[in-house]
Length: 458
View: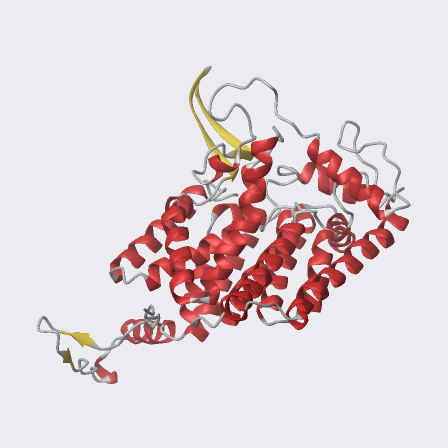
């Protein structure tokens, strides 16, 4: 039994109550139309064209990411306190007393729990544009927009329609966690970009380039390993299909995996060695990798904890319910009547949290996408499931065997795959079309509710 894949684009024919298609209404004379109506009609026509809708979507995503990028002025948001100060140290700039890494040797990366490349990108931006919020956050802004483009290419490389790609990109673009990390100076968006680019290259069977790109990702943050795992699982499914069909696996079928691993190892190990010879005191990349792994393993929760979210940390099962959200930075406006505080409301509120409509749909969308991948062999559905498994289950396993501390923003690499699953559910499950539009409206409302600027800055 095959699963029908209907067209995702908008339809232009209308149907009456009898089910018969009625002719389109006659267009009024141009001379009798108002300019406003002509503009609205032209816009509606253009929005039915995916080649117009996609650029408009990306422009909207860029605007909300870049607006007020330097605010709150002079304040470091969340882990910018580590990465921006590490970049300042790499540049040899003097840090204020009491700041993270104050007194560290200039020109060397003091943030040794991560590879140097991400901090070097921030430092390069600061060298060009100065020590300000725009420079700190520009690498993440560029990476975030690049990740949206790479994600769309993944959908298209999997053989899906442009409209499904636009829907999936829209869900990803207006998720709050993706949005926030696409405009603050941390490493998470910078490592997500090469992971997604590598996934696209793997779908196009450019195995060496996929391995090289993942190697570059590891030079930013070790979590690029989960992208490598995803590519490995994807290839493993291909080998399993070949074995089930022929009861053998050819040596030629093993070649892609070998190429990816070798390319990844050469770039990751060789690149880390080159970076360390200039920007750290490590003489061996393996010593540095050992330091990174040990640092992560030593991030442990207190033995006794009370409450669902006793601190900013959380577990993988809590992520799927959007629990244990993190306040990245908050600026309150206090209203007083004399000496009495009447109210205190946030004017700026950056939170590490998902758009609430995304986790609410995640479970049913993932289950449907898994079934859809199994019944139809859909490439994109298979990629979505593999990406979720590779980027989520390792954290579940770690949480079961240790009390390593984790945070909600670890969920960020999963958001593209969850967005894919939701798009597949909305367009391929034959739900009424009003469900799609209702979900999108609620999704935008959720994005607005979590938008960090609660008032228009002066």
